[in-house]
Image (cartoon, rainbow, N blue to C red; front, top):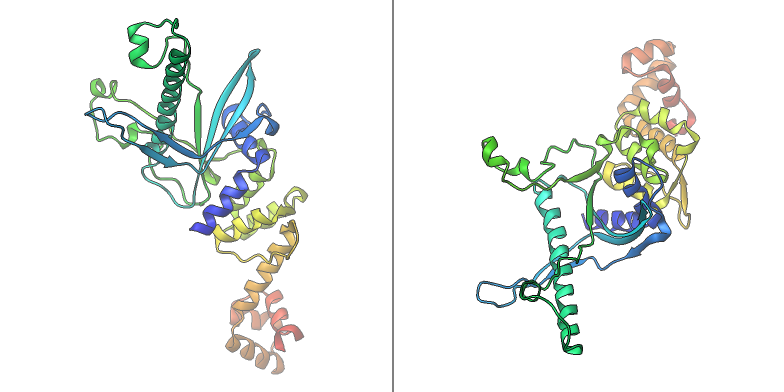
Length: 316
């Protein structure tokens, strides 16, 4: 679990991949968020809301990844916070978890603004504000920095958990439901991506492999595409971790040839499938003059597999 978390955090922290994910989520793959415009932010979310008796009650949570982004929209320069939560397993309370991260961040922004006004008052005795502004610690013209959090699920099971806060409530009539808040879970998993070409980095190809890896024919077809041949070592490690495969990863190399690794994996699997009894039985039938076609029917394997069993590599 810790190894998987460390791998995915390292991988998704890459600015190019991080930007690619949010361009897919927000702009349908258009390259609007630039990697160079991303700024690392502290992943600890902390706020100090007042308790019932006026005492401070610290709330602190730690995100996986948080980055600030300067972007332009309709000639206006905007600053937005983007967060990623990576999941190895389905989390059935994810909407509440992400909502809490965002809410704490908004609360911390208000607290920071309150501190700024407190400092201004000390430095400038002529600073004017209304009673309501003083008590709020927030002025009408102040604005929050938007926070958008996305969950990346690396499993290939269907996400059967709630995708919004309202889905987690018990059943309520429509009149009541109108007054209940909602929080939408932004989810990216291999099974909810319909067009992998909307990604412009290796991340899309990685998710595509995670989607089809259990189907040998689909993997063969996918890896026949030259775009799917080279993968980073970290991506290959993620595939190994989340699929149970054991692609051979060369030491001190930055990339891996996925087509070769897949071919080696299949060969290894076939060799392991030839148990000693099957090999001995096949050899005896062959020495007795039985045709390869008949042997194949007896051991319930293709003729090509019979030929491999009879090859010197397998016999010795």
